[in-house]
Length: 500
Figure: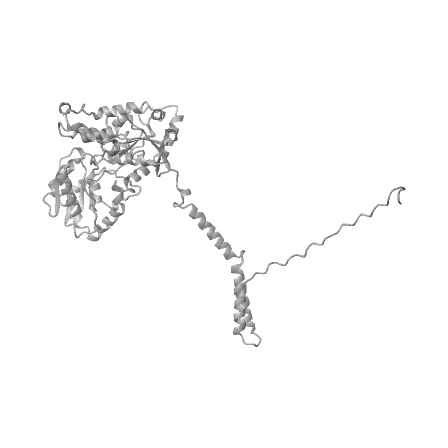
């Protein structure tokens, strides 16, 4: 009913129900290739009705193509998995920047110049003719040249760190010591040792040289300077790196730096509590003769065996005199006594470049520069040094580039030459080919040579340094038996026999 005085309500419109659109048919797979096949089959078939066999074959072809082209087919899945695994392996390959380990950060101390360029100046001043001006005294540092020296690795490493940046590998140089993993002390310790004996204090003062140079005093001053540095005191120098390539370098302070990483030529003058293969790095000597630029071959090498060097040495080097007595009258063997000089180096270059084998007997210490002279000459080294240590043995198999002979056998008359004459020409060529592959590891002037490999070896010590420094923080008691397992050192066969 209507209420009085009000217009009637309009009826509410009923909702309009829109029916849902019919489901769209699945998209047709547009297979152009099957249509082409059908058209080709239609043209090829006669006008009469096709045989059931032909129709069945066409159906099988269509089904196979559908399975191959379908995204959900097993073949497509296998292909996708193959591509995915391939991309994953590529992303984790060594060539990928993401897979490369972070470089070890090294800080090089800005030592007072007397420990670096000052050593070079002192060396040249000591050799200047009496009464003449020293040319090196007025040269700026960047124009100084390190003297030709078999221990010049200290110069090459110093110059290399000067140019390294924060992203270089395997070590990166940082300017802030707070960012460093390791600390390099660039004292020219081997050259400093060689300055001393040239001139007596009286002769030095008479020629106008300010004062006699003292390597021992330099070592003491260096340690006094270091011991004032907070980063040395923090871990007792364990994360520091020294180069002491000459066997006598830093001898006066070696016990005070034995916790550090030492870069040495061998362990001939070091005790087992001072150095070890685990914490230290073996360096190659700088070769003193010119590298051989020719190819492998034996035709241009008429001499069987060559050696030129000091005949009389101390300690383990006494084997040299015995070898001289045995070999000096052998046919096609050249063995000469000679000290380091320009004339000797020219003769050694000619002798090594024209010999199949080069003898390397122990000297005052197990190693020496003549081994590396032989390698850059493609002259197969014959090593008679029972306790020698060799550089980069994690990447170089020295048994493939050298012949090792025990001292007790080498001094037997006729043994050495008989053995070498039995080595075939083809085997010598194999040795030479292997030497050529690794020759760059012994040429300091090569940009990819020993300097980069030395830094890689140093970088491998960083985790051990971190382990030992962390371990040292938590130790509350120290052993009283005089040993410290943190210095893991090499043991000679004699020591091993005694210990057993």
